[in-house]
Length: 116
Image (cartoon, rainbow, N blue to C red; front, side, top):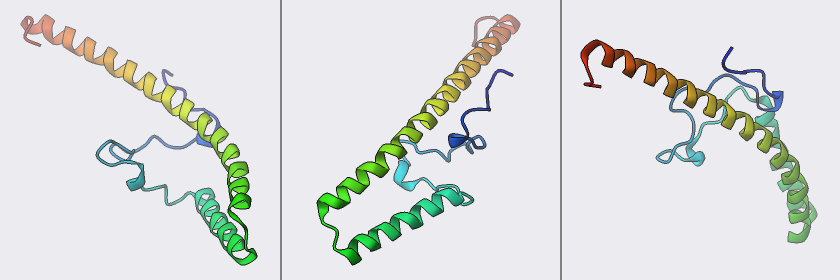
């Protein structure tokens, strides 16, 4: 197949629904995360637990920053893998669409002159 859909499982999933991804008019903050993502929901719950523990134990800002740095480094590595896979998919789709558009335009031009 032209498209490789067997990328790393850390970013595996179905193709996005058209219009569901963040855009300039609907940035990331308005993006609806998958409802069925148990891992995302668990991550959110764990973050809330960590926040509560920081509050209950009187964690100072330096301790909180240190924790966030450890967590962020791990998350960033996973996000980089997903971004690379989705960028590759985007690139392949763009190339396929451009090739198809060229074929369609050439076919139409051969039927009726250079109107297209």
